[in-house]
Amino acid sequence: MKKILSITPVFILLIACNSSGDKKADETKTDTVSKQTTTPANDLSSNPVYQKGLELEAKSDCATCHRVDEKLQGPSFLEIANKYASMPDTIVGHLAGKIITGGKGVWGEIMMTPHPALSKDDAEALVKYIFLFKK
Image (cartoon, rainbow, N blue to C red; front, side, top):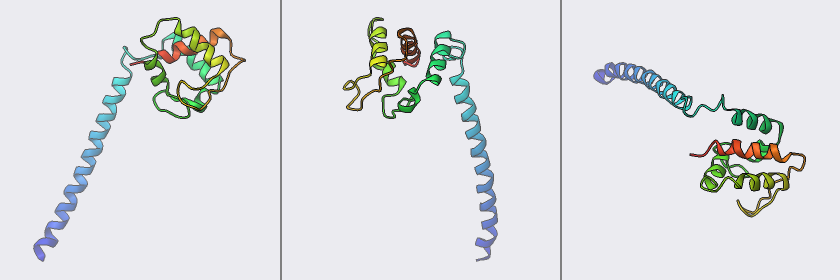
């Protein structure tokens, strides 16, 4: 019994030291991930298409139904970009029209809300912005 009682504090100390080591490993992993996402090759912050799209998205209700990489009510921007990645450039105008007029059936039965106040140029800018997320 004395051996168990004398080993227990050592065991607890080892667990405590190891958990802070895991935290440090997690921080290192986080740093690595953040460095990967901000490399010049995929850093969109200085891209004018990205800036315009971000501005338009902030002024509209896109985020109500869409996220960059997660499905909400509508598909994610990543899903949209990947679906239309191999299509010709004429798809930009078609999708811009869908943003303005709305629709349903392509991504399921939930209807996309029309955005008639959005100009054709702004809708095309949003489509080009979404296409930046393709992988």
